[in-house]
Amino acid sequence: MTRPTSRDVAHAAGVSQATVSLVLGGKWRGRVSERTAGLVRDTADRLGYRPNLAARNLRLGSTRTALLVVPALTNEFFARVYTGAARIAAEHGFGVVLYPSPDGTGPARDPFASARAALDGVIASSMAADALDAIGGAELPLVMLDSDPTGEGAAAHVNLAIADGMNQVVHHLTGLGHRRILHLASAVDTWTFDVRARALRAALTPDCTLTTVRAPLSVQAARAAMETALAAPTDPAPPPTAVICDDDILAAGTCKAARRLGLRVPEDLSVTGFDDLALATAVEPELTTVHLPAEQVGEHGMSALLTVLEGGTWTAPDLPVHLVVRGSTAPPPPP
Image (tube, rainbow, N blue to C red; front, side, top):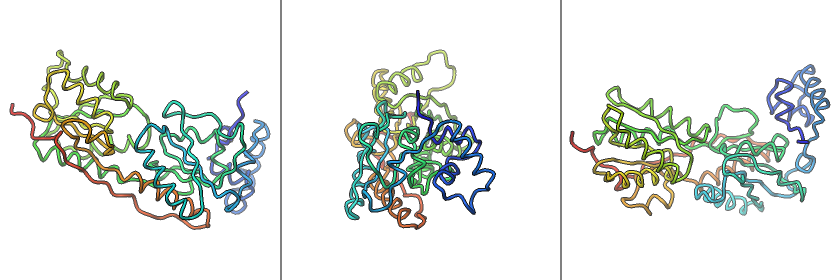
């Protein structure tokens, strides 16, 4: 039988996970009404909820260990995030334990099932947020990376200027003369990809047309999706002259699809990515993409957690991003 989580208690009681954490942690007085506190306790008892005591009873200095929750270790971006977090942690006598999700996006098994490891706090990517229930995330100080800043439950957020990055992509392409745009969007349903889609729509001028195609985050899936989209013979509309991809992996798949269809990049089709992974300079032509300072994300995530553990408030602005123009973009072909 699955052990009920704090999220289950919050859902059943009709309150936020933060409220559950406050009540069950004994920190609700003056912040939550007695009626709500009683409701949470009764609901927890009814569901048989038991907090993760190995995590809940910790205090700063007990283990000096933080958990970094990421969707996959095979993704270069999150490897860089870990590098940044570990650097700041080492400067303060902390260690960082990695907790990847087995399928790359969803929840992982409880990492404390065999060894009831103790932690001082959690840093989590929004792409791996579902894994937090397995570790009793509501019982520990939580810093969310690349996530909705209005969301509840986190003590701090560390975000990138994602919308600005997409604005830079659009202005670059429209400045080259592109008006028929295809957006190859990630099929992963997270805040960061929603921001990219909204920013793209908002930045386009009225004389632009936009088509959206979604694909899982793999080169193969992107190639298949783009072969279908670019080779649609029944579509009377003119084909796109530029493809804006949600990340570099999707952009690599797009370049493969274009080559298979006999299209030249960038002469026939411009392609842009997002992240500026090593892959961006491994493809030919090299990829125009938005550089995301992944190591700084990790550094700020660990710094934010340390600030929270010391009783402070994290107030740093979003990390700036910038477009790196390379060989995969050019003016559109003549009519």
